[in-house]
Image (cartoon, rainbow, N blue to C red):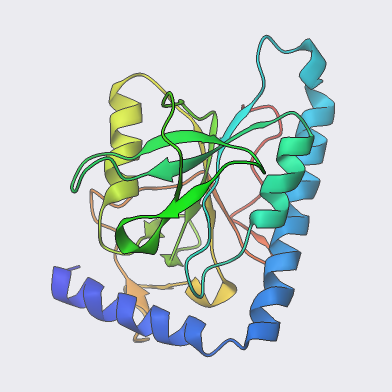
Length: 214
C-alpha cells in the first residue's frame, strides 16, 4: 500500500471514529476496560504477583481525543501492584521510552498533545497496550503514520525483548482484505507491526492472548 493510500485510509478511519457520540465512546471505553481487566485478573491470579521476582510492567497510554479511554484500567492495575508506564517521545523519529506512572504522577502535554509522565528511569515493558487506528483479522496494525510504535517495537526486538503486544481499537477500525472493494481495504507492509491480539469493546481479534505468555 502506498503512503498516499495509507494516508487516505487513516483519514477515513478518523472520520469513522468521529461519528461516535461522546456517550458511545464512554460506553465502549468502559466495555474495553472491562474486557482487559477480566483478562488481567485471570493472568494475575494464574501468576500470583506476590510470588514474582518483580511486578509485571505494563505500558499503557493516556487517551488523545477520540481514542479509547483506558484510564480506569490503569488505575486498577496500579492498585493490583502492576507497574504502569506511559510512552515518552524522546525525540522525533526515535523509539519511544516508557516511564513510570502512578495516580500521583504529574503529566504534561508534549508533542502531538501526548500527556507524558515525569521522566525517570526508562522501563522495559512486559506488555504493551498499543493505540491502534486500524487492524486486520490477523492483528496487523495500522497506526497514525508517525512510526513511533513501529520503531519502538523494532528496537525492543533488536534488544532481545519480546513484550506481549495488545492493540487497543474501536470496532470501527476493522479493515477489509486488499481484495475487497471497500474503501477500508488494507495490505500490510513489511514495516507494519503484527500484534499478538487486538482488544475492542466487543471482542478479541483474532483471540485473547494466552494467559501465561508474560
